[in-house]
Image (tube, rainbow, N blue to C red; front, side, top):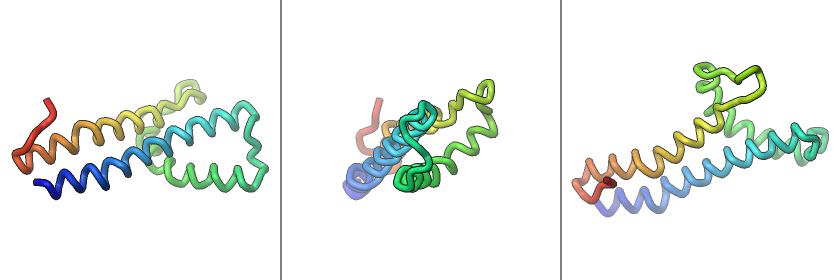
Length: 107
């Protein structure tokens, strides 16, 4: 029991939190590019945006097939990815661990 909770607390939860912030930064960076604050011609900005896109695009692509961008402009896939990450991190995994080991569960 303690091993699964330790694995969750010290490994899985921090990775999901980091992934949450990466997606959040990707969204903010997209807005900054859209408003002309970040220039894509800058090699450092292009490298950072490419890294963020390489991490976030594979998660958003399946959601975009189900919910396409509204009017071709408003993309809700990143918001849905953020909600899924929070759901999995804060409810699904602790509940699953509680069911597996019979320990404390979130109610």
